[in-house]
Length: 328
Image 1 (cartoon, rainbow, N blue to C red):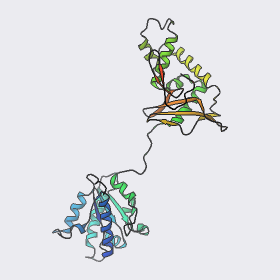
Image 2 (cartoon, rainbow, N blue to C red):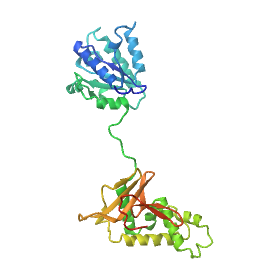
Image 3 (tube, one colour):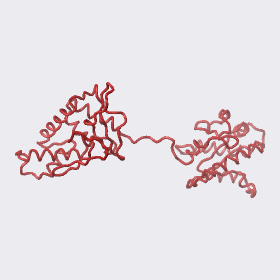
Image 4 (cartoon, helix red, strand yellow):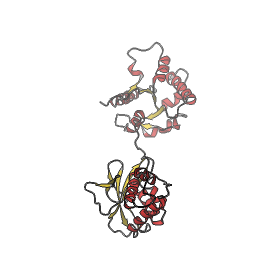
């Protein structure tokens, strides 16, 4: 038996159409209970009837998180008060309470859920119950309860992906900016660790530069590694590094080259994106990009399948089993 869903109470409202219908409703209640839903019907109380069934119904409606309304022709007639006076007074009473709850309730999500035993009975669902989703539960216990259970349990059938770009889309955007020479956009689309490692590597290679001597190298590297660096040396760093990258990717015109559609995922926040030509050629591992998810967005984490580790000097850690031609 499935584990109960905490604090979820379901009341089933129905008309007493006859023994067969009562049995079908009992079957529905027990199927829901077997699935872990605390479903309740008046049949569970008939051995010890309350002094007032209307008061019992009012209390149960108040306690219930969801009310399942089993609609039939008889239910519709009584809900709409079209039956003879004194006939079906229970449904007439319930219908009034349900209607008042629908019109005066302050809920964004449906609490009163119409269900039918047969698909063709959907047409019988009364206004205003027909304004929300309805469910077919079957007459003999063979109906699919999964859609209804998802609502009662609050478990979605489809889960949206996290907002943000896909790694292959982010790789293409970076490739286009590189091809067009958008230096600062290229730099901005690199991961913080990669920007820092590139800045450290550049400072080691240019340690004799007059603007480098005499400065704390850690502070200088951090300043140059900013997403939008403003330091006086940033133009030299960015132009030099981006020019090297443009040379490496020079043959990869975005009109004829692009990332493969299904990158290799590495854990939760890394992916290896390989480039391929539009003429159907094989992907180019030597021009692969390691992408990393930072917040909601994917950025370039390295120009090969290896993790970048900033330091003096910066180093790289190979990703086991991944091709890693090329380098930082």
